[in-house]
Amino acid sequence: MITQRGLRAEDRPLIAALLDSVPAFTDDERAVALELVDVTLGQPSTDGYGYRFVLSFLGAPGGDGAPRLLGYLCYGRTPMTQSTYDLYWIATSPDFARSGVARGLVATMESEIAREGGGLVRVETGSREGHGAAVRFYDAVQFTRAAVLADFYAPGDDLMIYTRRVAPARASAAPSAGEAPARVDAPARGDTPPGEPALYDAAFGYRDYAAERDFLLACARRFGGRPVQRVLSWACGPARHLEAFAELGVGCAGADGSAAMIAFAERAAGARGAGACIRFSCAELDERPDVAPVDLSFVPLSAIHQLATPAALERHLRLAASLLLPGGVHVIEATHPADLTPSGVNRTEWTELRGEQSIDARFRIHIERSTPDRVVPVTLEVVCSARRNGGAPRELSSIRQEATWYVPDLAGWRRVAERVPELSLVATLGDFNVDVPFEHAAAWRLILVLKRL
Image (cartoon, rainbow, N blue to C red; front, side, top):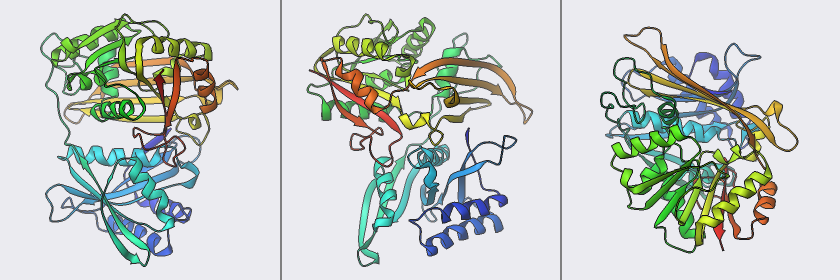
Protein backbone atom coordinates (compact mmCIF):
# COMPACT_ATOMS: atom_id res chain seq x y z
CA MET A 1 0.00 0.00 0.00
CA ILE A 2 1.41 3.41 -0.98
CA THR A 3 0.54 6.28 1.35
CA GLN A 4 1.44 9.97 1.48
CA ARG A 5 1.83 12.39 4.38
CA GLY A 6 3.71 15.47 5.49
CA LEU A 7 7.14 15.82 7.09
CA ARG A 8 7.89 14.57 10.63
CA ALA A 9 11.05 14.77 12.71
CA GLU A 10 11.71 11.04 12.39
CA ASP A 11 11.79 11.39 8.59
CA ARG A 12 15.13 13.24 8.42
CA PRO A 13 17.37 10.13 8.43
CA LEU A 14 15.05 8.46 5.92
CA ILE A 15 15.37 11.43 3.56
CA ALA A 16 19.15 11.51 4.04
CA ALA A 17 19.39 7.82 3.15
CA LEU A 18 17.15 8.31 0.12
CA LEU A 19 19.28 11.20 -1.15
CA ASP A 20 22.42 9.10 -0.70
CA SER A 21 20.86 6.38 -2.87
CA VAL A 22 20.40 8.71 -5.88
CA PRO A 23 23.67 8.82 -7.85
CA ALA A 24 22.65 11.93 -9.79
CA PHE A 25 22.85 14.18 -6.71
CA THR A 26 26.14 15.82 -5.73
CA ASP A 27 27.21 16.21 -2.11
CA ASP A 28 26.36 19.92 -2.29
CA GLU A 29 22.88 19.14 -3.61
CA ARG A 30 22.26 16.63 -0.83
CA ALA A 31 23.36 19.21 1.74
CA VAL A 32 20.96 21.81 0.36
CA ALA A 33 18.09 19.33 0.30
CA LEU A 34 18.66 18.42 3.96
CA GLU A 35 18.98 22.09 4.87
CA LEU A 36 15.39 22.61 3.71
CA VAL A 37 14.31 19.71 5.90
CA ASP A 38 16.14 21.16 8.92
CA VAL A 39 14.69 24.63 8.40
CA THR A 40 11.17 23.22 8.23
CA LEU A 41 11.59 21.05 11.31
CA GLY A 42 13.39 23.71 13.32
CA GLN A 43 11.44 26.81 12.35
CA PRO A 44 7.96 25.91 11.08
CA SER A 45 6.48 28.68 8.94
CA THR A 46 3.49 30.65 10.16
CA ASP A 47 3.03 32.98 7.18
CA GLY A 48 2.26 30.41 4.48
CA TYR A 49 5.57 30.94 2.68
CA GLY A 50 7.59 28.15 4.26
CA TYR A 51 8.71 24.88 2.74
CA ARG A 52 6.08 22.18 2.39
CA PHE A 53 6.79 18.47 2.09
CA VAL A 54 4.93 15.48 0.69
CA LEU A 55 6.40 12.05 1.47
CA SER A 56 5.42 8.79 -0.20
CA PHE A 57 5.73 5.49 1.69
CA LEU A 58 5.32 1.83 0.88
CA GLY A 59 3.43 0.30 3.80
CA ALA A 60 1.55 1.94 6.62
CA PRO A 61 2.11 2.33 10.36
CA GLY A 62 0.95 -0.76 12.21
CA GLY A 63 1.69 -3.07 9.29
CA ASP A 64 4.42 -5.68 8.97
CA GLY A 65 7.79 -3.92 9.16
CA ALA A 66 8.57 -0.21 8.98
CA PRO A 67 7.11 1.78 6.09
CA ARG A 68 9.69 2.43 3.36
CA LEU A 69 10.25 5.94 2.01
CA LEU A 70 9.75 5.81 -1.76
CA GLY A 71 10.20 9.49 -2.48
CA TYR A 72 9.49 13.01 -1.35
CA LEU A 73 8.76 16.44 -2.73
CA CYS A 74 9.41 19.92 -1.32
CA TYR A 75 7.59 23.01 -2.58
CA GLY A 76 6.32 26.36 -1.38
CA ARG A 77 4.82 29.70 -2.31
CA THR A 78 7.11 32.09 -4.13
CA PRO A 79 7.57 35.33 -2.13
CA MET A 80 6.37 38.59 -3.70
CA THR A 81 4.04 36.79 -6.13
CA GLN A 82 0.26 36.49 -6.08
CA SER A 83 -0.14 32.78 -6.79
CA THR A 84 3.17 31.29 -7.95
CA TYR A 85 4.82 28.30 -6.30
CA ASP A 86 8.30 26.80 -6.56
CA LEU A 87 8.95 23.08 -6.73
CA TYR A 88 12.24 23.04 -4.85
CA TRP A 89 13.07 19.37 -4.65
CA ILE A 90 11.81 15.98 -5.72
CA ALA A 91 13.58 12.67 -5.21
CA THR A 92 12.52 9.04 -5.58
CA SER A 93 14.22 5.77 -4.71
CA PRO A 94 16.05 4.22 -7.67
CA ASP A 95 14.38 0.93 -6.69
CA PHE A 96 11.00 2.44 -7.62
CA ALA A 97 11.89 4.25 -10.82
CA ARG A 98 9.09 4.34 -13.41
CA SER A 99 6.55 3.27 -10.80
CA GLY A 100 4.51 6.50 -10.64
CA VAL A 101 5.90 7.70 -7.28
CA ALA A 102 7.16 11.04 -8.61
CA ARG A 103 3.99 11.57 -10.62
CA GLY A 104 1.88 10.92 -7.51
CA LEU A 105 3.89 13.46 -5.51
CA VAL A 106 3.46 16.12 -8.20
CA ALA A 107 -0.27 15.38 -8.43
CA THR A 108 -0.68 15.90 -4.68
CA MET A 109 1.26 19.16 -4.83
CA GLU A 110 -0.89 20.43 -7.69
CA SER A 111 -4.06 19.42 -5.86
CA GLU A 112 -3.01 21.47 -2.83
CA ILE A 113 -2.06 24.44 -4.99
CA ALA A 114 -5.41 24.23 -6.80
CA ARG A 115 -7.23 24.13 -3.46
CA GLU A 116 -5.51 27.38 -2.49
CA GLY A 117 -6.53 29.16 -5.67
CA GLY A 118 -4.31 27.86 -8.40
CA GLY A 119 -1.39 29.60 -10.06
CA LEU A 120 1.93 28.84 -11.66
CA VAL A 121 4.49 26.22 -10.62
CA ARG A 122 8.14 26.87 -11.39
CA VAL A 123 10.99 24.37 -11.20
CA GLU A 124 14.67 24.75 -12.02
CA THR A 125 17.12 22.02 -12.98
CA GLY A 126 20.45 21.66 -14.71
CA SER A 127 21.24 20.28 -18.13
CA ARG A 128 24.23 18.13 -17.17
CA GLU A 129 24.01 14.42 -17.86
CA GLY A 130 23.22 13.56 -14.25
CA HIS A 131 20.02 15.59 -14.46
CA GLY A 132 18.80 13.79 -17.57
CA ALA A 133 16.14 11.80 -15.70
CA ALA A 134 14.72 15.01 -14.20
CA VAL A 135 14.58 16.69 -17.61
CA ARG A 136 12.82 13.68 -19.12
CA PHE A 137 10.35 13.60 -16.23
CA TYR A 138 9.34 17.27 -16.52
CA ASP A 139 8.92 16.86 -20.25
CA ALA A 140 6.81 13.74 -19.70
CA VAL A 141 4.43 15.36 -17.21
CA GLN A 142 3.99 18.31 -19.56
CA PHE A 143 5.84 21.06 -17.76
CA THR A 144 6.80 23.77 -20.27
CA ARG A 145 10.41 24.71 -20.92
CA ALA A 146 10.09 28.42 -20.21
CA ALA A 147 13.76 29.45 -20.36
CA VAL A 148 17.32 28.18 -20.65
CA LEU A 149 20.29 30.15 -19.29
CA ALA A 150 23.42 28.80 -20.95
CA ASP A 151 26.42 27.87 -18.77
CA PHE A 152 24.58 29.00 -15.62
CA TYR A 153 25.95 26.35 -13.25
CA ALA A 154 29.17 25.69 -15.12
CA PRO A 155 30.40 25.66 -18.70
CA GLY A 156 28.10 23.24 -20.51
CA ASP A 157 25.67 22.98 -17.55
CA ASP A 158 22.68 25.21 -18.34
CA LEU A 159 19.91 26.35 -16.04
CA MET A 160 16.58 25.01 -17.35
CA ILE A 161 13.41 26.65 -16.04
CA TYR A 162 10.15 24.71 -16.35
CA THR A 163 6.66 25.98 -15.57
CA ARG A 164 3.22 24.46 -15.33
CA ARG A 165 -0.07 26.27 -14.87
CA VAL A 166 -2.46 24.87 -12.27
CA ALA A 167 -6.17 25.55 -12.64
CA PRO A 168 -7.97 26.49 -9.41
CA ALA A 169 -10.23 23.85 -7.94
CA ARG A 170 -13.88 24.19 -8.89
CA ALA A 171 -16.80 23.24 -6.73
CA SER A 172 -20.02 21.98 -8.24
CA ALA A 173 -23.44 23.03 -7.13
CA ALA A 174 -25.28 20.81 -4.68
CA PRO A 175 -27.87 18.51 -6.23
CA SER A 176 -31.48 19.53 -6.26
CA ALA A 177 -33.84 17.98 -3.74
CA GLY A 178 -34.68 14.37 -4.49
CA GLU A 179 -32.00 14.01 -7.17
CA ALA A 180 -29.00 11.71 -6.86
CA PRO A 181 -25.84 13.83 -6.83
CA ALA A 182 -23.97 13.87 -10.13
CA ARG A 183 -20.80 13.59 -8.05
CA VAL A 184 -20.08 14.26 -4.44
CA ASP A 185 -18.60 17.72 -5.09
CA ALA A 186 -20.69 19.36 -2.40
CA PRO A 187 -22.15 18.07 0.84
CA ALA A 188 -25.27 16.03 0.30
CA ARG A 189 -28.41 17.44 1.85
CA GLY A 190 -28.50 16.18 5.41
CA ASP A 191 -26.71 12.83 5.56
CA THR A 192 -28.13 11.42 2.34
CA PRO A 193 -25.64 8.78 1.16
CA PRO A 194 -24.61 8.87 -2.51
CA GLY A 195 -25.52 5.85 -4.62
CA GLU A 196 -22.87 3.50 -6.01
CA PRO A 197 -22.44 5.24 -9.42
CA ALA A 198 -22.14 8.65 -7.72
CA LEU A 199 -19.63 7.25 -5.23
CA TYR A 200 -17.57 5.75 -8.02
CA ASP A 201 -17.72 9.05 -9.88
CA ALA A 202 -16.54 10.97 -6.83
CA ALA A 203 -13.64 8.59 -6.21
CA PHE A 204 -12.21 9.31 -9.65
CA GLY A 205 -12.92 13.03 -9.56
CA TYR A 206 -9.20 13.78 -9.47
CA ARG A 207 -8.83 12.89 -13.15
CA ASP A 208 -8.24 15.80 -15.54
CA TYR A 209 -10.84 14.79 -18.10
CA ALA A 210 -10.32 17.81 -20.37
CA ALA A 211 -6.59 17.12 -20.57
CA GLU A 212 -7.22 13.43 -21.30
CA ARG A 213 -9.72 14.42 -24.01
CA ASP A 214 -7.05 16.61 -25.58
CA PHE A 215 -4.60 13.71 -25.44
CA LEU A 216 -7.08 11.43 -27.22
CA LEU A 217 -7.58 14.04 -29.93
CA ALA A 218 -3.81 14.37 -30.26
CA CYS A 219 -3.60 10.60 -30.78
CA ALA A 220 -6.13 10.88 -33.60
CA ARG A 221 -4.17 13.70 -35.21
CA ARG A 222 -0.75 12.06 -34.83
CA PHE A 223 -1.60 8.45 -35.59
CA GLY A 224 -4.97 8.49 -37.35
CA GLY A 225 -6.15 9.51 -40.77
CA ARG A 226 -9.42 11.37 -40.35
CA PRO A 227 -10.87 14.34 -38.41
CA VAL A 228 -12.72 13.50 -35.22
CA GLN A 229 -16.41 14.29 -35.47
CA ARG A 230 -17.79 11.39 -33.44
CA VAL A 231 -16.32 9.38 -30.54
CA LEU A 232 -17.21 6.23 -28.59
CA SER A 233 -16.20 5.55 -25.00
CA TRP A 234 -16.24 1.87 -24.05
CA ALA A 235 -16.77 1.21 -20.31
CA CYS A 236 -17.75 4.88 -20.16
CA GLY A 237 -18.78 4.87 -16.48
CA PRO A 238 -20.09 8.30 -15.44
CA ALA A 239 -19.18 9.60 -18.94
CA ARG A 240 -16.90 12.42 -17.80
CA HIS A 241 -14.66 12.04 -20.84
CA LEU A 242 -17.68 12.26 -23.12
CA GLU A 243 -18.89 15.43 -21.41
CA ALA A 244 -15.48 16.94 -22.14
CA PHE A 245 -15.82 15.99 -25.81
CA ALA A 246 -19.35 17.40 -25.89
CA GLU A 247 -17.97 20.76 -24.75
CA LEU A 248 -16.17 20.91 -28.13
CA GLY A 249 -19.30 19.99 -30.07
CA VAL A 250 -18.12 16.45 -30.86
CA GLY A 251 -20.82 13.81 -31.25
CA CYS A 252 -20.54 11.22 -28.48
CA ALA A 253 -21.58 7.65 -27.75
CA GLY A 254 -21.02 5.80 -24.50
CA ALA A 255 -21.24 2.08 -23.77
CA ASP A 256 -21.20 0.48 -20.33
CA GLY A 257 -22.26 -2.91 -19.00
CA SER A 258 -24.05 -1.44 -15.96
CA ALA A 259 -27.60 -0.22 -16.53
CA ALA A 260 -27.42 1.72 -13.25
CA MET A 261 -24.27 3.50 -14.38
CA ILE A 262 -25.83 4.34 -17.74
CA ALA A 263 -28.89 5.81 -16.00
CA PHE A 264 -26.64 7.84 -13.70
CA ALA A 265 -24.51 9.10 -16.60
CA GLU A 266 -27.62 10.14 -18.56
CA ARG A 267 -28.97 12.12 -15.58
CA ALA A 268 -25.63 13.72 -14.82
CA ALA A 269 -24.92 14.69 -18.43
CA GLY A 270 -28.43 16.07 -18.83
CA ALA A 271 -28.09 18.15 -15.67
CA ARG A 272 -24.91 19.71 -17.01
CA GLY A 273 -26.31 20.40 -20.47
CA ALA A 274 -24.45 17.65 -22.33
CA GLY A 275 -27.25 15.08 -22.53
CA ALA A 276 -28.33 15.97 -26.06
CA CYS A 277 -24.82 15.31 -27.38
CA ILE A 278 -24.34 11.81 -25.93
CA ARG A 279 -26.08 8.58 -26.89
CA PHE A 280 -25.74 5.70 -24.43
CA SER A 281 -25.89 1.95 -25.01
CA CYS A 282 -25.79 -0.81 -22.41
CA ALA A 283 -23.07 -3.21 -23.57
CA GLU A 284 -20.04 -4.96 -22.11
CA LEU A 285 -16.57 -4.60 -23.59
CA ASP A 286 -17.02 -7.79 -25.61
CA GLU A 287 -20.55 -6.93 -26.80
CA ARG A 288 -21.45 -4.71 -29.73
CA PRO A 289 -23.12 -1.46 -28.59
CA ASP A 290 -25.98 0.02 -30.56
CA VAL A 291 -24.08 3.04 -31.92
CA ALA A 292 -23.15 4.41 -35.32
CA PRO A 293 -19.57 4.20 -36.61
CA VAL A 294 -17.08 6.65 -35.09
CA ASP A 295 -13.77 8.35 -35.85
CA LEU A 296 -12.24 7.72 -32.43
CA SER A 297 -12.95 5.18 -29.70
CA PHE A 298 -11.24 4.54 -26.38
CA VAL A 299 -11.26 2.42 -23.23
CA PRO A 300 -10.27 4.45 -20.13
CA LEU A 301 -9.13 3.69 -16.58
CA SER A 302 -7.69 0.19 -17.15
CA ALA A 303 -11.23 -1.11 -17.73
CA ILE A 304 -9.88 -3.24 -20.58
CA HIS A 305 -8.44 -5.68 -18.05
CA GLN A 306 -11.95 -6.86 -17.17
CA LEU A 307 -11.57 -9.01 -20.27
CA ALA A 308 -9.76 -11.85 -18.56
CA THR A 309 -8.49 -13.86 -21.55
CA PRO A 310 -6.65 -13.15 -24.82
CA ALA A 311 -9.71 -14.42 -26.71
CA ALA A 312 -11.93 -11.86 -24.98
CA LEU A 313 -9.46 -9.09 -25.85
CA GLU A 314 -9.48 -10.23 -29.45
CA ARG A 315 -13.31 -10.10 -29.54
CA HIS A 316 -13.20 -6.56 -28.20
CA LEU A 317 -10.68 -5.43 -30.80
CA ARG A 318 -12.74 -6.95 -33.60
CA LEU A 319 -15.82 -5.10 -32.34
CA ALA A 320 -13.85 -1.87 -32.05
CA ALA A 321 -12.61 -2.30 -35.62
CA SER A 322 -16.16 -2.85 -36.87
CA LEU A 323 -17.26 0.47 -35.35
CA LEU A 324 -14.32 2.57 -36.52
CA LEU A 325 -14.33 4.36 -39.85
CA PRO A 326 -11.20 3.89 -42.02
CA GLY A 327 -8.36 5.96 -40.59
CA GLY A 328 -10.00 6.11 -37.16
CA VAL A 329 -8.09 5.17 -34.02
CA HIS A 330 -8.86 3.07 -30.95
CA VAL A 331 -6.99 4.04 -27.76
CA ILE A 332 -6.66 1.72 -24.76
CA GLU A 333 -5.45 3.01 -21.40
CA ALA A 334 -3.95 -0.09 -19.81
CA THR A 335 -2.05 -0.84 -16.62
CA HIS A 336 1.74 -0.81 -16.86
CA PRO A 337 2.90 -4.46 -16.99
CA ALA A 338 5.45 -3.71 -14.24
CA ASP A 339 2.56 -3.27 -11.81
CA LEU A 340 2.37 -7.06 -11.60
CA THR A 341 5.81 -7.04 -9.97
CA PRO A 342 6.77 -6.12 -6.37
CA SER A 343 8.42 -2.90 -7.57
CA GLY A 344 5.32 -1.78 -9.46
CA VAL A 345 2.39 0.31 -8.26
CA ASN A 346 -0.03 -2.41 -7.18
CA ARG A 347 -1.50 -0.76 -4.07
CA THR A 348 -2.85 2.78 -4.09
CA GLU A 349 -5.16 4.79 -1.89
CA TRP A 350 -6.42 8.33 -2.13
CA THR A 351 -8.95 10.70 -0.62
CA GLU A 352 -11.32 13.18 -2.22
CA LEU A 353 -12.73 15.87 0.11
CA ARG A 354 -16.16 17.30 -0.72
CA GLY A 355 -17.26 19.73 1.97
CA GLU A 356 -18.07 17.69 5.06
CA GLN A 357 -17.82 14.43 3.12
CA SER A 358 -14.66 12.40 2.67
CA ILE A 359 -14.39 9.80 -0.09
CA ASP A 360 -11.62 7.31 0.71
CA ALA A 361 -10.62 4.89 -2.02
CA ARG A 362 -8.29 1.91 -1.98
CA PHE A 363 -7.26 -0.12 -4.99
CA ARG A 364 -5.12 -3.26 -4.91
CA ILE A 365 -3.72 -5.67 -7.46
CA HIS A 366 -3.16 -8.92 -5.57
CA ILE A 367 0.11 -9.82 -7.25
CA GLU A 368 0.75 -12.60 -4.72
CA ARG A 369 -2.17 -14.46 -6.36
CA SER A 370 -1.31 -13.78 -9.99
CA THR A 371 -0.94 -16.70 -12.40
CA PRO A 372 1.84 -17.34 -14.93
CA ASP A 373 -0.67 -16.26 -17.58
CA ARG A 374 -0.83 -12.78 -15.94
CA VAL A 375 -4.35 -13.21 -14.56
CA VAL A 376 -4.71 -11.53 -11.17
CA PRO A 377 -7.47 -10.59 -8.68
CA VAL A 378 -8.07 -6.89 -7.98
CA THR A 379 -10.22 -5.04 -5.44
CA LEU A 380 -11.56 -1.50 -5.25
CA GLU A 381 -13.06 -0.16 -2.03
CA VAL A 382 -14.65 3.29 -1.74
CA VAL A 383 -16.08 4.67 1.50
CA CYS A 384 -17.98 7.95 1.88
CA SER A 385 -17.92 9.39 5.41
CA ALA A 386 -19.27 12.56 6.96
CA ARG A 387 -17.61 14.53 9.73
CA ARG A 388 -19.59 17.20 11.54
CA ASN A 389 -18.27 19.81 13.97
CA GLY A 390 -14.92 18.07 14.28
CA GLY A 391 -16.45 14.80 15.49
CA ALA A 392 -15.51 11.29 14.50
CA PRO A 393 -16.28 10.39 10.87
CA ARG A 394 -19.48 8.44 10.25
CA GLU A 395 -19.75 6.14 7.25
CA LEU A 396 -22.58 7.04 4.89
CA SER A 397 -22.08 4.53 2.11
CA SER A 398 -19.47 2.28 0.60
CA ILE A 399 -18.76 -0.02 -2.30
CA ARG A 400 -16.42 -2.97 -2.70
CA GLN A 401 -15.73 -4.35 -6.14
CA GLU A 402 -13.80 -7.56 -6.80
CA ALA A 403 -12.69 -8.59 -10.25
CA THR A 404 -10.23 -10.78 -12.11
CA TRP A 405 -7.91 -8.95 -14.49
CA TYR A 406 -5.78 -10.09 -17.36
CA VAL A 407 -2.75 -7.76 -17.66
CA PRO A 408 -0.69 -8.66 -20.73
CA ASP A 409 2.87 -7.51 -21.18
CA LEU A 410 3.66 -5.61 -24.36
CA ALA A 411 4.46 -8.79 -26.26
CA GLY A 412 1.07 -10.19 -25.25
CA TRP A 413 -0.71 -7.11 -26.53
CA ARG A 414 1.14 -7.37 -29.82
CA ARG A 415 0.12 -10.99 -30.24
CA VAL A 416 -3.55 -10.15 -29.72
CA ALA A 417 -3.43 -7.15 -32.06
CA GLU A 418 -1.82 -9.22 -34.81
CA ARG A 419 -4.89 -11.48 -34.85
CA VAL A 420 -7.12 -8.54 -35.85
CA PRO A 421 -5.92 -7.57 -39.36
CA GLU A 422 -8.37 -4.65 -39.62
CA LEU A 423 -6.34 -2.82 -36.95
CA SER A 424 -2.68 -1.83 -36.85
CA LEU A 425 -0.91 -1.15 -33.55
CA VAL A 426 0.66 2.18 -34.48
CA ALA A 427 1.89 3.46 -31.08
CA THR A 428 2.59 2.31 -27.54
CA LEU A 429 2.81 5.25 -25.15
CA GLY A 430 3.80 5.56 -21.51
CA ASP A 431 1.77 8.61 -20.52
CA PHE A 432 -1.04 10.94 -21.62
CA ASN A 433 1.43 12.54 -24.00
CA VAL A 434 1.96 11.51 -27.61
CA ASP A 435 5.68 12.30 -27.30
CA VAL A 436 6.30 9.85 -24.43
CA PRO A 437 6.87 6.29 -25.71
CA PHE A 438 6.26 3.28 -23.51
CA GLU A 439 10.03 2.76 -23.23
CA HIS A 440 10.47 6.25 -21.68
CA ALA A 441 12.05 6.36 -18.21
CA ALA A 442 9.00 8.19 -16.83
CA ALA A 443 6.40 5.82 -18.34
CA TRP A 444 3.74 4.83 -15.81
CA ARG A 445 0.93 3.52 -18.05
CA LEU A 446 0.71 1.44 -21.18
CA ILE A 447 -1.44 3.27 -23.70
CA LEU A 448 -2.03 1.47 -26.98
CA VAL A 449 -3.10 3.25 -30.15
CA LEU A 450 -4.58 1.12 -32.93
CA LYS A 451 -5.53 2.46 -36.37
CA ARG A 452 -8.40 1.17 -38.51
CA LEU A 453 -7.01 0.20 -41.91
